Amino acid sequence: MKGENLILFVLLFFSFFIGGWGWWLERKLTARFQYRVGPPWYQNFIDILKLFSKEQIIPSQANRVIFVLSPLVTLSSLILVTIILDRIIFLREGFLGDLFVILYLLIIPSLFIILGAFSSSNPLATVGGTREVKLMLAYEFVFILSLLIVIIKSGGVFSLEKILDKQMSTSYINSVSGIIGFLLALFYLQAKLGIVPFDISEAEQEIMSGVLIEYGGPLLGFYKVARALLYFSLPMLVIALFMGKNLGWQIVYKYLIIILIISVIKNINPRLRVKDVLSLFWFFLFPLGMIGMFLSILGY
Image (cartoon, rainbow, N blue to C red; front, side, top):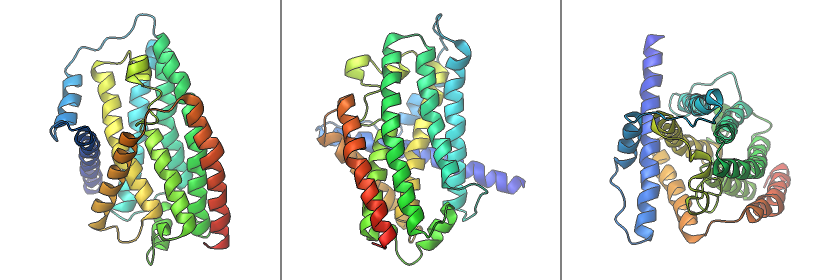
């Protein structure tokens, strides 16, 4: 048991490192797109360490309990998701839950980021929280359709471990419905990470970091650690769902491809307005997902 816990701890630390590195790579690519040098590879880790060395200040008008608990719950949820994915992808061990447990754990961070923003009593944070609510109602439904496409193609299997086994011969992305599901998952990933064009809840030029405006010190550090884990867990989940064949060393270039895609999307699009985001997800991606489900039922 101790040996297994040590392995999981090492994998968790490795996941945090890869996520922080992937986050840096996205920033570095953005800098190169803009003809800048960009940060060194260790910049994210230095920034996080610096936050934990600073004094923690809590707004006097804030709901202190929710304000403090929000980043802690956010990080705890993402640690669980990361451990589950590490066990399934790297150790090939299953767990008692299924895809919807992972979905539930991924919803928790968004909910508590919203609660943390509202609890701060800052009007700009409230605006950011309101935008995040609308964004969440858009991308979560689209991701559910993406998961349903995978479940249908797997013959009604809900276990991520068994979905990987189903892709031993060919990955789901090699089919029409699989491509549609992968596209939906990419838009979900971009919005979940709050990357342009879906950074409306933080929007530094408009609402000065929005949902995180009142956070600093260790509490903001917890959010940054959680973000690094998101940069690991979300691409890995998409890879497992749609590119599950040959998850050995090939997982590296698959991860790099996803980071490159989200960086390109970020740098060729402006920030969308709230109504444009909702229109994109509800009136284009949602119908596209329904078509993908129909095609997956037909076997395409």
